[in-house]
Image 1 (spheres, rainbow, N blue to C red):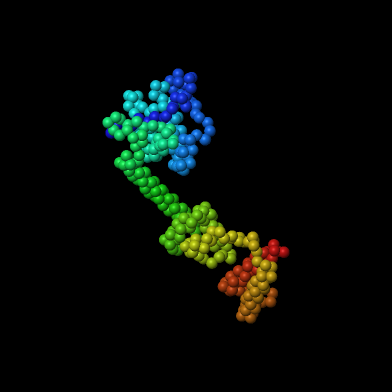
Image 2 (cartoon, helix red, strand yellow):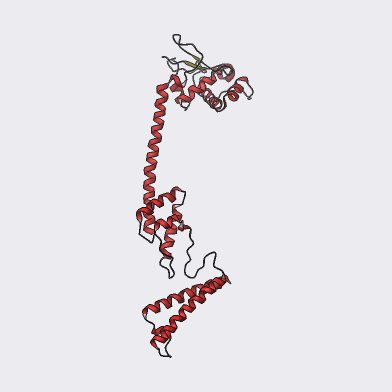
Length: 313
């Protein structure tokens, strides 16, 4: 089946003037102004989004036609004089052939009639362009190609994402303090990233947590899976000599200090009663290693709490 000849109706009188008709090729073309012609109203108001698309394709057809030699402007012919194929026109104006076919049906329809389609004499002379149904193999082939490209892109993206996440987790795992439960931690890590968590924030939180575990008053150890599940990278770690942005009430700190001092006093009394030290020697000097470590830890906590009280005051 030969290709139909597609033409823009009234090209010469609508889109050209005496000067442009003499030019071999045009760098511009004139067009009608206004949006109240019967063809425009029929195309846009009766066809919605499809009409808007058809209008855009018609503008592209006009731009293409202006670049053709003056002998054939307004029609779409090859250099041999044969009609351009639907595929060739679609390629030249950078649209899908199925979209072009659907647009031509509207542009040639009654009430619009901006284009005409002339079939060869031995074929049907219906003034309708080939529809998508006239190109079943072509359209189906293009749809299959697009679907294949989508699958390939999705597969490629998945491989890239998997590699990136794997590398990010290894970096996180290297920084995290507790090395238990790596497999469940990886699964939880993927979930929190998928939910929109920022990797750099997680990594920075893991590093802060590792540092805090080596401080005099470290937080309780936590496995990575639970740490990620509780979003602990958002925690504010209190460093020695510093206080959190929302400190405890002063009376709470005072009560803690009193409790710790009472515990320290008990260690002192036990050491005096048990070892009967020389009154000239400080009681701390006669402590055994274990009670001495507890006493030192209590003193450190008391000192930290007292600094918090000063800041709160």
